[in-house]
Length: 122
Image (cartoon, rainbow, N blue to C red; front, side, top):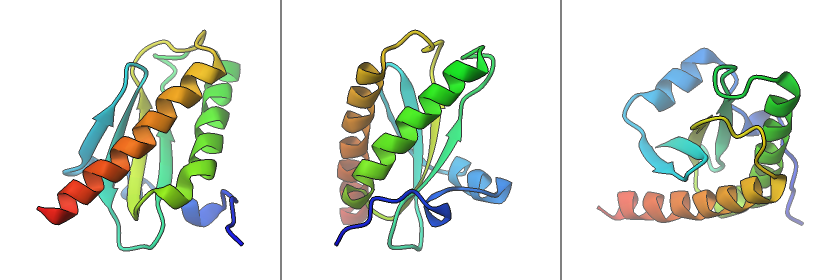
């Protein structure tokens, strides 16, 4: 049975883990998000979120975006390779509907999988 939990082992928690991703990542982008990714030594992906107050002013909107991202990641975690991911928002996306956020994220997860395979084969 496949687990769809989003436990501690699937999160980037320490600043050193984020710093590791910021050094020489490969990047995928959409109009709303940029995701930095770097292969890890684990059998599963890990996710870190950076949603700046400068981009999304209200905490309730930042929290809504984080919930959407976490839920999408939780559902797609088994399609992703062993990479550490840091997601950043590009602009003020506070009024973007959840359906659009989820659609963009789904495209980005598949892009990450394709780029990882291309990176490993080269």
